[in-house]
Length: 250
Ligand SMILES: [Cu+2]
Image 1 (cartoon, protein in one colour):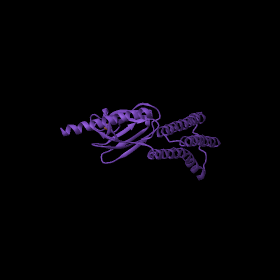
Image 2: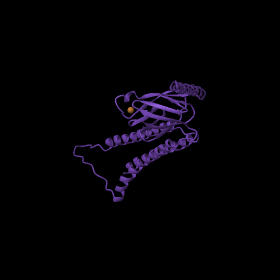
Image 3: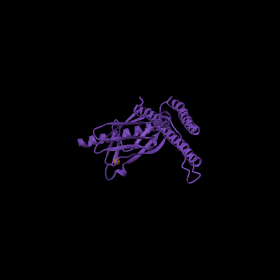
Image 4: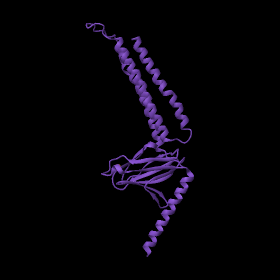
């Protein structure tokens, strides 16, 4: 009995220790502009660490008990400790509460992170995204429409998304964002590009035969390069609009 108490004691201590350091580090991270991808990774690591530590504790306890309480003789049937009602209830609820505490803690962190995902920073660059069978269209305003997403490093980007035909889902694994894209509804995600480079955006809702082709590049450029790129595509869009207008006249 004393031994079992010791086991429960170390479980409580271990799980409490799992929770403490992460509270402080999460507060430090959110002091500057929150980055959903970083916070998502943080929570994911924490879940992996917690289930590993808990799994190892349980594994060691189970192996230890198998050896300790092994029958020494085939006729050895063992004996059960006599428990009062209070002791029996404590054995049910205290260990359950210990593990539920970690579950609730991780859930609370998940809800907090979800709030970050839902609160778009005020200075976010807005791009309208439309899903079609089977490609993505990005509308920057000013007539600038592209089939790839280009964004500046260091500025939050919000995507306001809808679909023309069927349900799609916009997924950027590198930025840890994914959201359904549906006809007749506008959904949104935001992300913070931290370093220049190309990653992928893809559809993750089966939307017909060429669903597998429905992916495109997401390129993050340093702000000066982004401005050059935007000026170029804007000039091209203007020239194209004028050419169409002139063609209509003649
Ligand atoms: Cu699809």
